[in-house]
Length: 263
Image 1 (spheres, rainbow, N blue to C red):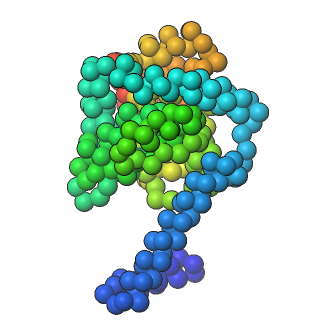
Image 2: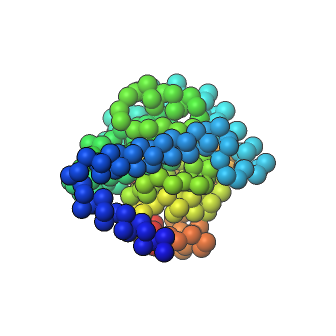
Image 3: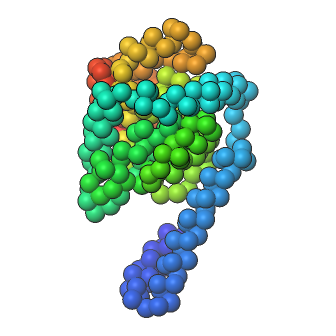
C-alpha cells in the first residue's frame, strides 16, 4: 500500500509540474532530503550515529588520526605528489569515471580522501561533472583538503559509521584510494560501501604506487597499515563473502586497480 501511495504522489507531481503549488511541493521535498543528509552527516561527525565502534576499532582509528594529523602538512605539499604521481592520479580519475554520462553528475564517495588529491579530479574526469563526498579519519587532512578548494564535500568519519543509517542519494562509485591497507576491518568497509552504492555501482580499490608498496608499509608498521591489497579475484571474493558485491577485476600493477560491482 505504501508503494502505491508513493507512486500516486509521484504521478500527481509529474502531471502538475507546471503548477506553482506542485513546484513548491517539489522544492520542499528536495529541501527535506538535503536537511536529512546534513543531519546524518552531523550525527556521524559527533559520534551520535547508529551503532558504536568496538574498542579495537576506536583505538585503531585514533592511531590513524594521530598519524595522519601529524603528516597532513607533508601530504598537502608538492613534495607528496611529484609530477609522475600527479599524472597517475589524473589517469586513475579518468578510469574511475569511465561509466559517467553527460546527462548526470557522477556521484563518488572517496574513502580516505586525505588532502583531496583525487577527490578534486573527478569533476573534470566525469562526462557530466561529479558530486563528490570525501570521508577521512583525520581532521587535519580534511582541513587541508578544504583549504585547497574545489567542489567536494569533506566529512571527518570512518566509512563504516558514515554508511550506517545513510539515507541520501546512492553513489555510482565508492573509491578506496591509497587507504585500503590502513582500514581496521576491510570486509566491514566493503559492506559499508555496498550500503551506499546504487545497483550496478562499483567499489574500487586503487593505489598509485601499487600493492608491493603497501606491503612495504605493512612491514614497517602494521599498526598503521595492518593489511595489504587483494591480489587475486579469490582474495576479493573472501573480502565480500557477506556483502552484495561481485569481484569483477584486479590489476596487480603500478598503479594498482581492482573493482567490485554492486549486485
